[in-house]
Length: 340
Length: 243
Image (tube, rainbow over all chains, first blue to last red; front, side):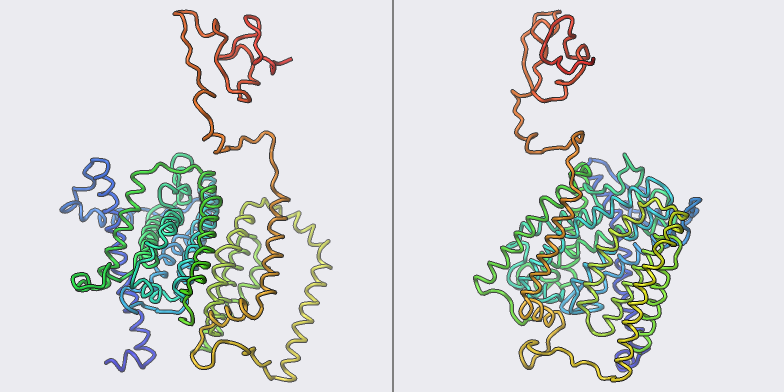
């Protein structure tokens, strides 16, 4: 049996498909319950009850929403570029799924434990903008178009600081492999020595996923619903799934880069009894809670304030921090050498 | 297996490159260009250069092509005008095409006549023994052996960037820019005056509101809300009156 899976081509393909399903099915269920969690947490913060009719504690609400969304009619606006209009949500959704191939859930436990894992994540997350841009353009609607343009400018701006933050982390690790990044945090999580970068990365992640307070591409008050204003039914649902999957992905990146991934907080007995994947899930859940907490707390940024924050605050701060990290590591001789 | 992957990537790459120049809609052209970048990244992966593949996607697809698409989407393109331009620029384009084609033929001829690949540069790539990932190999080459050239490239790019910003940055006299430090430096005394007024007299008996110098009201029309009209009282706020 093991021979079939590891040594023949067909067996290998089946194995990879099974591995992908083992990641994607829990992910999709997590997305369904993340929507419920968001509504419940925000309801609690605003002293409401939230969804509580479908199932105990509203546990079936996510499925009720999904069925409602699927059974609606798909409307394609007249004058829309038909292929691109339908392609954009698929692109957003599949990119959000693709990125999970390299996320390690245990020591070396990833679908693809590749050498340039962090670059792969950066590449995939930088492609997310195309879904929005194409959706905005193909809808043949000015609101959707403006939403798409805003998202393009926003994501390109914040990717710069995300990249620089990642570079400072990589300087301390000496490898682009995600597993090595986690293993480098055995003694201390990077959120302690690099606390300012942790904050910068988290805020940039909010902007990158178009979450409040940076949800300008879909600012209701001025752009109706932003780039997906013309979408309905399943195509809207795919955008929705993609957005929430991206939130979980960004939380996963925060956990891996700064919170030690699948590592327990301390390498001693009661913590090491809990398996690594559960630690990763706990950290992702914590980040998601902060995402929702932020949404319930802060009002939306104005567009010029958003750009100012990205280019005039985060970019210089992360650049300075990168230089300072490099200088510190070089001066103290801690610079990792020959790891990769 | 790897040959099949190579042929799939190169076939899609060539096809999308052809579509870039033949698509009628410029936005479709840019999207085909992005598809082309993707397949080029795939070819890099096949060749074992995973770092270059990722950087190609991050830099070209993730940043350059986004801005490109951004601009092309906002263009208001008149196709009849483009056809007129075609006549004028055709000879120039044909010349560039011919030169590129000639170079391609020369390279191909060289490869046919002496099908020996030039030896790959291996000098100084890492320590003997111990495999080196191509990320590390590139790093050693760029940052250790050719650091001066690399820094010069960076310097040229920096100058180009500053030039582009200087050319496009214009301070509009009518623009209302928010200067955040000025807002923070504003004290209460600059903007607010507490008046002790007798009942029923209004503020005009005391000389009107105190207005911060240089504010909007300096140029406002006298007689409008909060500004004493010129016939009842002459004040220096009336210097921007019409006529």
